[in-house]
Length: 267
Length: 322
Picture (cartoon, each protein chain N blue to C red):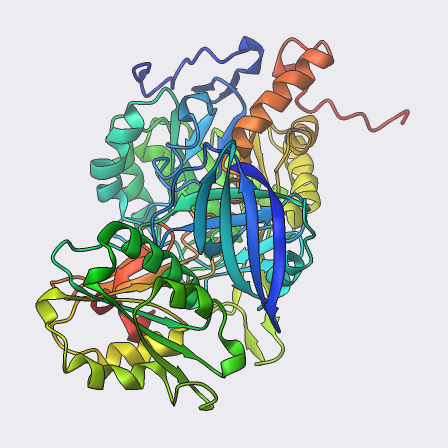
């Protein structure tokens, strides 16, 4: 458990915030898809809340951990009221992040809503480790143009952009997953990899329309208490190759899973 | 790393202070602080962050004869100063524990207490037999108090005859120290404690979670798939403390206090009220170091008050001339 301080806690859109935390240098480098458990030193909320890493940078004498979050309940509402300087406790980095195959040339990053946070961190990682020439494709979805956060950062990284909104105020009108079958027609499955993070409805519809043979990793979200695999609050149902149902923890076995391993009928 | 000790006596452990040692039946612990079942996995989940050798004991996640998948999500919900859980005793099964988890724990100088769950009396006995035969299990804690399963669990813990039947049955199949973990979801917990004592228990641990509920008013649905769940955390501490105090006065065997313990002061409240030892539960989720910080805090308290042995503090509550 690391103690840190809020550098800034900026409101981006209606209920969306960008939080930057100063932490000691002993904090390990997170991998894309990994997450942290965050709490304040106040008695409430009692439990830490899990957040994917949005950005991580090392500086002289400290590191900066950046998170994106949306106010969805009492815990995140209290976080949104933290002024600069607030002391926080951070456990992490936790979980298994995205695995990146060496043979992959066509990286397709798919994000819905706040899913853009780990997807942006992954994009930056891919850009730094693989260079631009291999190219990235972004499929981004939100309810409305007003709901997009963090687009500028992805545009700086660069790639092919496909944007969809439920109300058609930006990009095509519809779900981000509606675009996939058309795009996938041009992809060579052997060098293509999909990385996804988004709300449960989007993940379900993706599972239903996923083109055959294309590897797809998905970052899952779940309520959790410990982040270490002990409370089992975040367990989801997965299917083994022998078609047996096995519970896995989002915090320790995930949060990134093979999309085809998730048993959507019996989560 | 010290080698394990004889399973009958438990690790001798040279805790930082000999005055912290406690005894429950034939189980000797280096200090009175354990991690509660279901909040510390099988130990390995915390091993990279917590020096397991410093704990009084690890009580592992409840074990059943066959692996259990547990309940569907959502399984947990935060509530004021606490949390509800309805995990449904998801576990890998006693045989997988013995083969896959126990070898790791044997390398540590810490008492391992296996928590036992059954849907029937026979299952409790079979799981207890297998654990008794396994090297590296230092005591059994019998869970007659899980509120989140359809069969077994709390159904046994709310009837003194059933508590006695399970306790006596396990007593026949094990020579390990035998602890019965009681449910607070009863009218008079001392009746259950006396039943367990009379049937041969070496110790009583309490409390398991209080059955609770939480509703999403926008959608008019329960927050948990199981509808009800077990309440834990600071919210239940006063209830747990009251029940520990009542039970410690009702039985002669050691009482282990559980319920909302997050600080050394919380642990000391239970010890002063009559608990020989304590278990830290939900606090492990919030701060993996919680149990170690509590141990250090109790040591500091003993020193500050000039108390040589923790035993002098047990049940030392003054109720007159306040």
